[in-house]
Image (cartoon, rainbow, N blue to C red):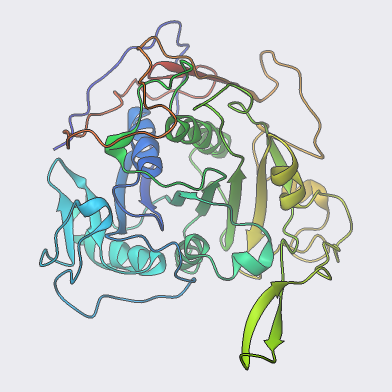
Length: 391
């Protein structure tokens, strides 16, 4: 079982915080680096986390609930960590808080809520469900309705549980055993930085809630982070969070080929980002795709909160997110109390020669991030990197 030791962070100004029971899942697989790095950092803050995630990559599966039709795996799992013939559901041998199941992301949530947690955890209903960080963006309502990561988020929201979907611009999913302690330019691995950024936002939301639900019933948050460049440079390692709205990121047309008699899809240039509720917030695709910024979109089971319905005006939406999320792209200067996040990705450990394309080392025991006492983002120091989220 994963040891949960205590690491006293230097210069940490620990303040009272709230440890949550958190269910984590994804679409990339239970052994993916992103979810494991986030798991380590959240447990390091004192949160009680359980992972229930796919045995195999479910990134190409839309947001539907599909359960395994076989009690055993019929193929090897992602990165051959599990072999065909293994049970369709089970735990990581190093940590009984980490589970896999052979189903879609939405099915992971239901299996966790109705089987894993009631039977094997000290709680039945989590305070929060996190889907991701997943490799590749989930932008706009077109992709939103097809993404397995959002399917898991909605499955939790339909049960009345606050949920957050996290997506990364780094599209290459790697196993947790490939994570570099330091890249060739002396920075943390993109998976580590992505997890650290996600942790800063999640903890800011926890601190803001002060023991209450972090979101109203039926609401969720979709976060898209940019491509983290730490393999080659520090050009994009500290993106700010920007409050955004959903807007069509792409659409397709059916094109008929007279020669073959077949159809194929082609991008539709008529896709519009028009906002029926006004232009108070930028479209998430415009924020993420054009610069080093992360989008934070609040949505409801109705797909997008109406500023003239559930939310009376834009201020109601901003009230749901912490100060770490900037509104209308306003940049808050660094300093105590301003809500910005500073990520220092440097590592004192030597660089690996394979930083650009990490090669798989032998399977190693999962090691914990090391838990400090629970603390707010007034001082959050994780591993070799530093996150200072000054709220």
